[in-house]
Length: 174
Image (tube, rainbow, N blue to C red; front, side, top):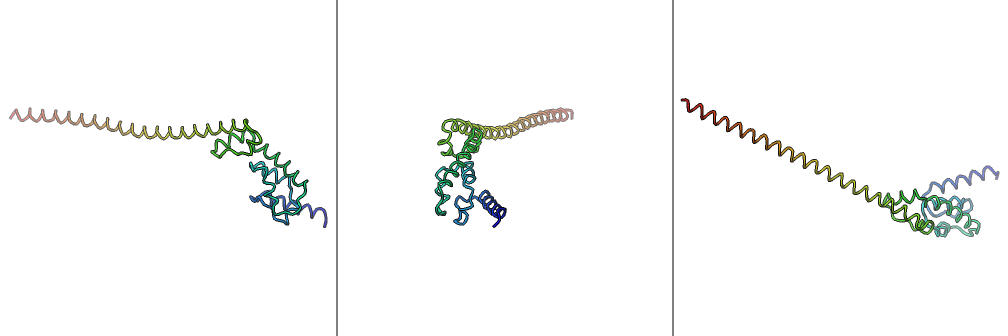
């Protein structure tokens, strides 16, 4: 086999792994797996470091270098996943606190995560406040309509009283 052909096969399997959501590898793919990239992807999704054993359970004779490559890739990916911005976004989205980041980033991650949770809570409170305001506006409109209606009723009653007086006055002239 020519080297370019082998490179295409390697690329095919790497891309297949990249786009698959699967955490296990088919035995035939073990030889061509980019262990660093697989570890990086797992880390960048917040997966656990122990998942290497889960991934290779179907592979035979995985070398120590594959394990080391996976762990190096995982370390690179978890740094990306456990960033301050990511911590904030994860908290703001309401997702649970990922233990992988607590193990990696500790208190710093938790601080940003809790800030995101606080924003989520405040946004929910603001939504509730907005709903209450809308309801009060409707109630206020109803009350304004009631007050307007009372004014109209009083005006009509006053007009009727005037008309009754005029009728009485007119009848009195006969």
